[in-house]
Image (cartoon, rainbow, N blue to C red; front, side):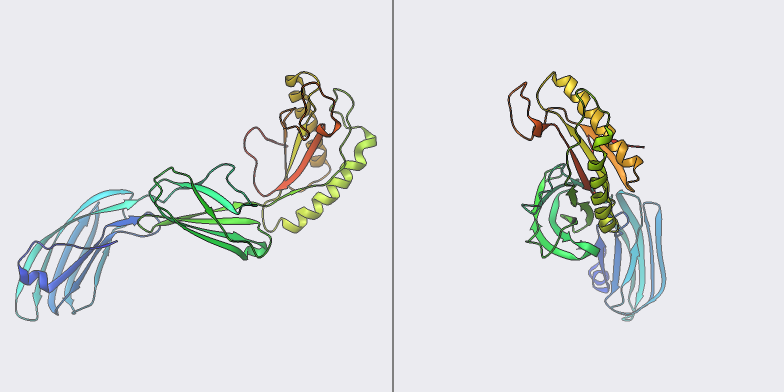
Length: 326
């Protein structure tokens, strides 16, 4: 990102001082600017620059080889910088020259996770950037932030293009994935994604036909699931923010719209029980009706294995139509 600036004076002035422009910066990371380096001792060197409302000044002696730096912490945008340089040098010569150059301050690089792209089995994640890409570094993180897998992908993808990056076979449990993305100028941003989840083994609560009420005879099943949920919560809460997600499902018997409403009501009833019973984390619920059959059947098929609920602990807040119990 350093570029030699052509000088607009006689050959002697060009020999007396070298100028380098840092053309690009990024808000909060690096600032653009100008570096002047005397090639001979100057008894006096007077420099004045204005850039995007920011000014830089130097007046006084300037030893040979000692850089004089100006950095301009300006808002995102492109600016034309102007100024003057005047000096008296050890060989008895003197002179002055105008200075003119442009700089660009970039906004922070935006990195976004492609929804549904995290694949633990394939050890892969996909992101998009809002500027041309340079490379993607992926680090799999285990308990206490230990690095358990790494990957590096050079990339020249255009802005908004999904970039899939993989990490190597992990040496331990993967709880989070850190993605550090660089643009084509070397500026970077990072994103940390929780990939941890745990499906709680449990016995299915049996509801009466068309009912979402939990019968007393079924409470022991929920109590057993709560014990397991608390145990896992206590183990992982220091690593991620543990949330409980309750998903309700039905078989294909009956009207699909009715099944959707019934699964929603049952999922809410179960989530409400976990919340009231003292599960310490957030509790979310959603009904899926007959849209996600565990056992694929035709319509109007009475399949008990499809009448179920999933209890999943996750470090990520669910999106879509999930509702949090308050």
